[in-house]
Image 1 (cartoon, helix red, strand yellow):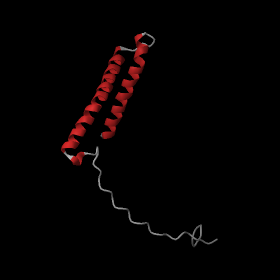
Image 2: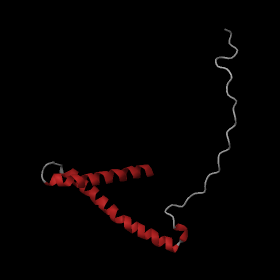
Image 3: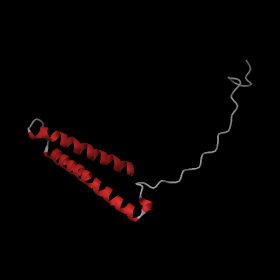
Length: 104
């Protein structure tokens, strides 16, 4: 489910930034968009601006949590490493090719 959430977040950022880039063209009637596309673009651009405004707030809250609890100092708690897989067995290379035991 995280993948769907990531894809939808990317789509919203892409549409929002694209609408911000194209909005000067729509103001001078060089590009005509339907009202539905204007609404979708405006909502996506508001989402982008809100996301950019939320970044410093998240960073500030994370730093406050790290001061209260030093175990949260990293952004992500690292899991212990997995043990190394056992070494592969040595297999003797073939000394012949073709079918075995078939009369010529």
